[in-house]
Length: 208
Image 1 (cartoon, one colour):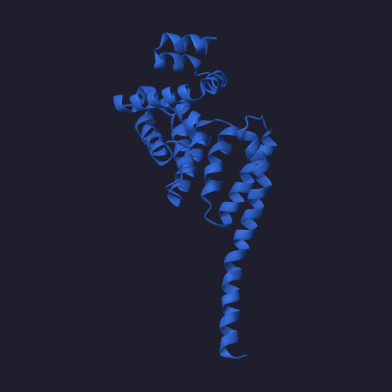
Image 2 (cartoon, helix red, strand yellow):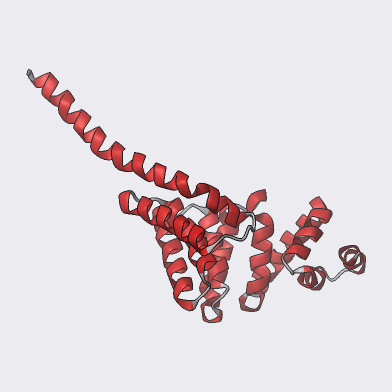
């Protein structure tokens, strides 16, 4: 075997070394994807299904550094059982995902939502909420959920943050007020919308 063939063989082995873990991680992720989508749609999963989702993400992380798997675990741990211990695990997992992908607005927003359950972490939660907005202010996928999280963090916000939240709600109302009303009803933040908009006409619409 000449030198060129040796180099090619070595390169192939290196590629294989990196490719196999990524391939296996992708398989693990795909097995849990339908369950993760079910959680996102609000479908109630059994504890066995949630444990399967957690296993799929933990196995993927054991093979490669996967920001998505780490962020997904933030939802899965709480879906399994919203205990203080699982909340801590969820927060730690999302933080690790952010370290791998610090420009991921969705991960920052999930961190803000998780920290909103812990009143003593209000400053960090608002900071995460603010970062998510700065990274993806006009992302329609994140928009309504960011408003919902903002209402949870309202008491910990600065006056400037509160004004930004109101501006987001005003924009959501102006663009798609029927959708905003439906979302507010589903997530039990309708009274917050009325309080923050403070407009008789808008309050009447939201109440109709």
